[in-house]
Amino acid sequence: MSDITIYYSPFCVISRNALALIRHAGIEPAVIEYLKTPPSRPKLLELLEAMQAPVRALVRVHSPHGADLGLYDPAWTDDALLDLLLERPIFLNRPIVVTPLGTKVCRPSETLLELLPVPRLPPFFKEDGSVVVDRGVRRW
Image (cartoon, rainbow, N blue to C red; front, side, top):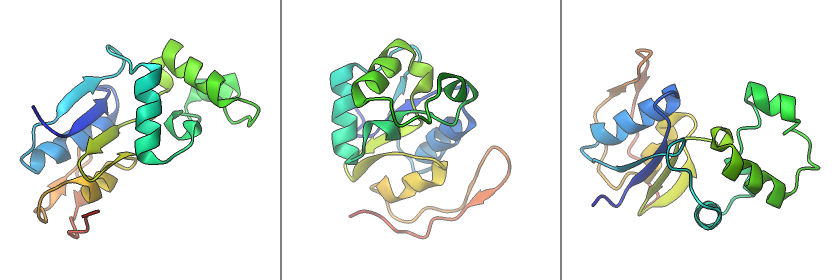
């Protein structure tokens, strides 16, 4: 089993690029399609602790429906945001990548490079044709 996990949506270009970049590194991660298998409340809290981030970091406040719900409003409590993610996982910010070097929401996808426990990679081409150049910086 891989020691790298990606919380992924096949409908999200950033998720697809992140997964392809991990595979470009020669790693086959555990892929969790969070819309089919949403993380539990304890798992969300575990991810937040690993990221050392507030609950809001896991919420897609910039989505069209997020504006409709007023997710920009700081009046949303952490518990209410967690409840929203459990009820409507489409609002989970993605992709979330977990590796031995750390956990983070990888937006843009190339920000996951610092989490990959591999040497510097050759250039990678995203779906749109743009090139990702690995500078070899890792969280070692």
